[in-house]
Image (cartoon, rainbow, N blue to C red; front, side, top):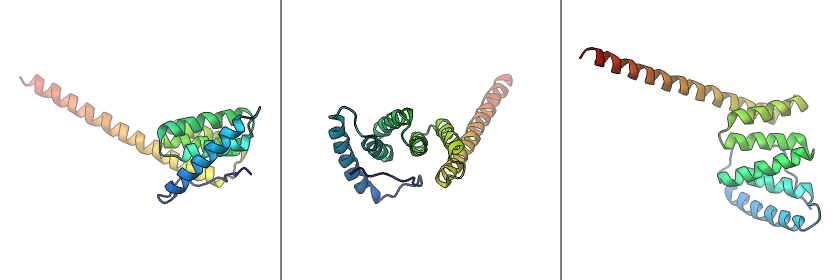
Amino acid sequence: MAMRRSLQAPVEDENAEFDLTAALERFEETYVKECAKERPAPEAKFNYAWALIRSKIRSDIKKGLTMMKGLLEDRFSDRDCLYYMALGYYRLDDVLESRRCLMQLLELAPNCRQAISLLDIVEDKITRDGLIGVGIAGAAAVAVAGFFVALSKR
């Protein structure tokens, strides 16, 4: 029987890595068996993609995103696919794509607490990264100005 994942918070549980590894192997095995059929059950693909996105390995996350995109195109559980795509993009530090998925999800389910919570985290990261970028640009401008001042005193 396929195991359906409910929406979960983006915070990782350090102790869950062992369970996640076992789940990833189990879901992969189920998905491979399903692929031997003419058309694999979308639940098997979803569960495997879910486990890949929760992995700490970037290539696994990317593979999970590709699978979730396929499920979304097939109109399988848009809400869940969009949430886990947003989570996967966030975990890959692609906060703009994560936000795009969350905004699309919130159009479908405006009261989805998990999406709202993840969107808050994503928006904070966008703001923080923007401020860091401004700080770096400011420091570079001061360094360049200092260089020219030193050069002009020669």
